[in-house]
Length: 111
Image (cartoon, rainbow, N blue to C red; front, side, top):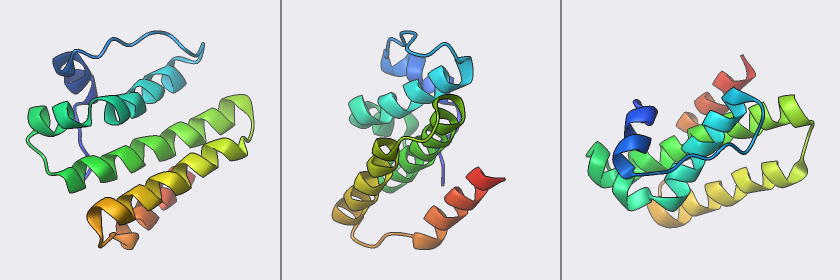
C-alpha cells in the first residue's frame, strides 16, 4: 500500500530536488515528502495509484523523515506536529483511516 520507485516518480513529475541537508539520506527522504506535498496530482496520475495509496505513502515518507531528522538534528516537537496534521488530513480526505496500517508504519520505523 506504499508507493515504490520514488526516484523515478520524482524524475517523471519534473520535481527539481535541491540540497537542503548535508546528510544525504535525510535530504533524499525530505524530497520524497515534498513530492507528495507539492505534486500530489502528478503522483496520482504518474503512478496510477489511488488517492488512498498516495496519502498512506505520504504518511510513510513523512514518518521516515521525522525519524531521520530527529536522529540527525535532535528531537523537534514541530516535526511530530506535522505527523498529527497529516493524520487529520487522512481522516478528512479518506474518512475511514486504516489505523492498523499507520501502526505498522510507525512500528517499522522503530526497528
